[in-house]
Image (tube, rainbow, N blue to C red):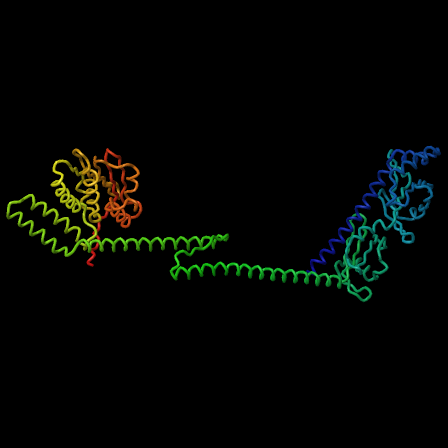
Length: 530
């Protein structure tokens, strides 16, 4: 840090030196402009030729000098001829400096700066040559206050103990507080020892200088070492306080964020505890934080799925229990009834009652299929055998009034289907479609292979029903009239999902179409031995 401050101080001295160079260059350029004006050249040519200038020519010369005069920088401007005669501007600022000019070294064709330490003035002396034949016509002297060159030094911030000075090429002070700078410092500058440390009045100072390439003036700046150290200490204190404030702010923000996160996590833990205690209605409110929002959404979805699974499992068990209860109520000693049907079959055979014997066999087969609780799935071919037995029994009742057409490929007969899903649909066609009809009718049963599914269509041209009644068939509002269809529909959805089941389309006086969608199953379902 000290090196940076020293480097900045050195750059400040260089900038001050450049500013002083700009002032000198401006004055030198102005002097060149003045000496080659037509009025100055004519006036001096007359003097050089021994021709006396008129008062009008003298007045014109003074007016020409007035154009270039800058009261803020200059004390006066003076034209000297080769005989030492001079003309001043402004009037009353006479200061004959011709003797010092004559005593100075040869000017050649260049301007020269001469300092007057007694009066604190600076003279820019420029030889005047003829623009016609380059003969020496005289000299032009611009007198400036030395304080003009002190202004760039005043802009330097070297502390209250800082010292500045500008020396000419002979190490004579032009401006500044050089009286406070020891001769040893001047010797150091002459020896070109820049950025050195020297004692001035018992205190250590860093010394910086820069010598101008154009004027050979040296700008010197001295800054106390204590000022640098005080500045470093202030900067270090500011940095320390800033770092401390940042650390405190970061800790406070981290604390707030952690508390905010802890509250969210606690809400999630509370919801989990409530869920583990059986509260399926618990939900986590949406959060503006993306991570917690996603976490809450996943938790809510999980609870919904578990609630749905529990509800589905409960409904399956409820339906199963109800079915078992109805079966127990309806089947008093089922094996006794099944054996009784076998006795009736043999009696009919022995007496030659073939029709009665066949009906008894069909009824026994249907009864056996309904009371066999060991299996839930049978092949489609076995289900069609049950339908054949049911149709035979119904045809004995309806005779030729009803014709049944079945269209199925042998390939589909090997797939497994839930037991007794087709019989309630065919029964609905007989009881609610054909029985109320006055004339003959047809029931069609068609099987269609649709990729992973099998679609069964049972249609009749019976009495049908209106659209409102058809819309209630698969709902709880239909009463017990279509309870068989509703039970089949619920069983299929419990087995396969909501995309499967029944659909009913009917038109009064035209007929009814019941469509059943099943999923193809190739593997046998394990038997339920209970």
